[in-house]
Image (tube, rainbow, N blue to C red; front, top):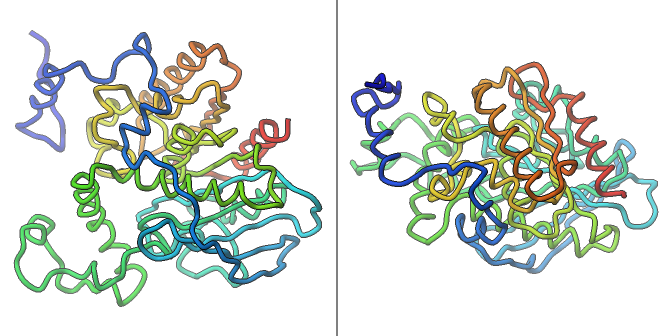
Length: 381
């Protein structure tokens, strides 16, 4: 009789896992038909495309050899999206475009500011994010300096697209959600950035419930807004519309995988620190991840690497950190092997590159150099 599985987060419910697996085959092997771009769009919801509505240039600047613009547009709901466009100040003519995608980071008060320098000094609160994840760099600026037109935009729940602080304050009367989450009567997300970020972590669960009721998922809404951003970038006369890529770490890597899967206009993607098979996350490594990483219904259709490979042979770079605290080594290696198999099946094994680095969860300067070179190779060919 096989040993009984035990999961730290499930305790006496550990046998729930085997019962769930008995209900239907989960995470089919690579012998099964691969997910297509249309499959992923349908799976995550919000499958349509939208144009950036009423786009505006808010201001311009030149700083550290880069010409910058602050732009904004509406996606059709909620506050306007704010974004920065960065390109070499001396560049003439259209350049390949890249979306630099900010991460989740448990930090929603700011979005683009975590990975890019704009016209003003970076907020002090983002220094720890940059130091811990990006070796102190504003990687979007470093990418633009390599000869790209880089778009860095806030997405649903972050920065200019975040929910108002008053909506995140703990309820004044007992409600089921407050009881489940324990509440924190001392927490005031209107008080400071740290308080906002703490409240926003719990608020994401509420947003995920709304997504379900609205027939979509957090993955679907974010991917939709990122596709709108692609349309904005392609519309610019200083961008080669046929040469668009994307790159991001962690939650930004999640966004890059979803955008690669759902947007035919993406010509190359770099997913950094956001790749593992889903079964490997059982046990202990589920709670630390965003709802974006868990599209409902995926388990019966495929696995996370299949999402990233949905548009194979579209070029894909995945960077892994061997000591990444968010993913088990076996899960990362299995994901790499699954991606190799998917691209081999598409007859384009060369179009996928997997790179393994020492260290913890990060996108350091060495990784950035390699990712930028891969994007240049694919988008300037």
